[in-house]
Image (cartoon, rainbow, N blue to C red):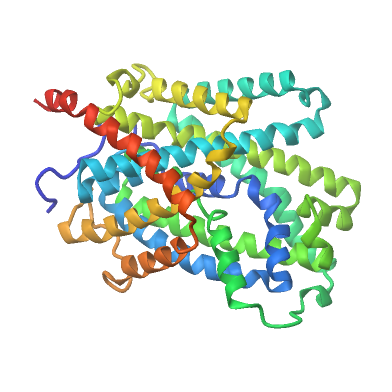
Length: 438
């Protein structure tokens, strides 16, 4: 039995997201624009030994997503990680976790949108000017917002289609690569330095991020105790395999030239298929980033909806559309903010804070998974049980603490300022929330 006061879900929202839809959303958000640049950065650090860093990072993420899987099977409130931490440790901790989710998602979608517009400008020169880029971004955000207001099932199916569409050119590259790869390019001249592997693994952790945003619509997932863990594990296995295969393909085709390639996958495709291959990957990058933006417009507004539901934002932000039963005000507000950041490009200085935010968020969610098991919180049905009992959360926390040793003092200060402002908002809204509960 759930403890007194355990959450029972958000009854005004439609539970329309199944296992494949949620898994597609996780893959869509995780495989963003970074994969089209990532192989060059990893090769620069480790050369042909780069797949080792992917495996190390996959192990770390495996521990983390096990915690997400159990927490998601126990808590079915919209808000994802925000809701997990809130149920486990109370409103204040949950609110801070929600701030981290929202900050990370907002900065990430704005950053990818800038790159998306730049990449689209390579295909359509009219979009290269500041005005053309701004019109393009406003149009994209408006259309995707309307689609997601229309219905969560429409947005989920749309994201599933774009997940397939953006993966096709990457899969073509992976399947064709063995016919073009030089085995000499894959040989390790020497064992990689352990420090280089660890630093590269930390970099790759951010390439695996996305599950924390894709799980925000948990209140709209069918049978969450089964759907959430299955979708997470399915998506992460697929992403790990794809990343390693792409790294090996690019390394095998380009060799030492991979480390200096500005568009490594497009360069590899050019070597394999000529100009057509390069164009195919450029189009694939554009589709990938469009799919990423679409997935984030589906996911991130649910954080604002959850904030309003709990009294941290005006109640109107938590409104549900009377016909489509979607959080239309939160979608519009989030899209306008992210679009504004993308058009202005003024968010670049917050990128480091976003990176730190995800690590701290993961730490809180791993502890929440342990606490939810201790409280025996159940969303309905039998919750997913992590292998190894309660050891996985502490192993995951140990990995995260090791990663945090590389954070600089000024980065900690920036995070402290952001969380300090969030704390002020929590205290300022406390009287209104108390009246609301009464």
